[in-house]
Structures are given as structure tokens and as C-alpha cells.
Image (cartoon, rainbow, N blue to C red; front, side, top):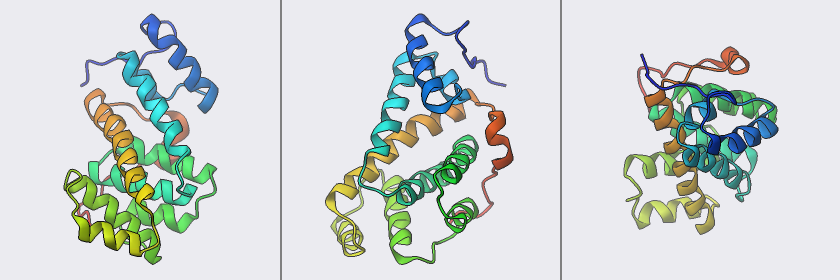
Length: 187
């Protein structure tokens, strides 16, 4: 059982109140992840900033979600996989992209699979991907900008995934229909 609190406006440190307000404005609620991160206001602010920056990358919504889903699955973050499923559905990401990610299966579309594989390699190898992997990613139609945007996505998800593991963040009601358990075999 976690000893961390999921903060709201009544319990959060004063410095976290503007961050909670920002989350409510952007999400229509304060997600439990942000409530947990509010214990460290700078961490909560960093999460929201990284979320915004990821939405400003050159990735399409589908590609952005492939990056997030890949990292969430690799880290076994049940909270983020459920939350991003809800968000992806709201952004009209194709159902087969979402179901493939949740099953931790390879994508049938070569470009999305190249993105998944590069992201997975970057996570597993802590960025030491090698020029051959970068060249293969570029050959799949991605750019050097995209290489670094994958790193941004990893930074974003390390913050949220690790915090969720430590805080044991409970799943918010809107995300509960999308609850996820990591499959026994991760490819």
C-alpha cells in the first residue's frame, strides 16, 4: 500500500494549486497521476509541460500514441496504458492501432512498426541505439527530428510511468473501462 496521497485543491502544497488548475482546464478533471505528482509541484508541472510539448511534435496523433503505448507497455504502466487508450480514442486513433498496442503486438503497417521498434530499442538500450538503428528509422521515412522526439516521449513517460509505480496511482473513473494488465510475454 502506497503512503503517497492523491492531492486535490484542499490537500496539495500551495505551489501545486496552479498546476492542478491547469490540469483541470486541460483534461476537464485533475487526473490521479497529476494529483499524485502534486506532492512535488515541479514534477507535476514537468509532466504537464512534457505532455504539451509532445502534442507539439511533428508526429501525427497516431504516431505519438505509438510512442507512448510502446513505452507504457515496456514499463508495465497499467495507469498510463488505460489513460492513453481513453485519450487515443478521443483523438480518433484507429481501433486496430490501440488494440495492437494493448496486446503488445507488432504493427502490420511498416512505418508504425519501425516507430515501435525504434522506441523500444531506445528505451531498452537507454538511448544507446547505434547508427544502424538510426539509419533504419530514417529509411522508414522518419527524420532526425523524430529521433529526438522519441527521446522526448521517453522522458515524458519515464516521469509518469515511474511515478505511477511508486505512488500506486489509482485509475480514474473515466479510464476504468480501459483498464489494462501487461501480457505475460512482451515482444
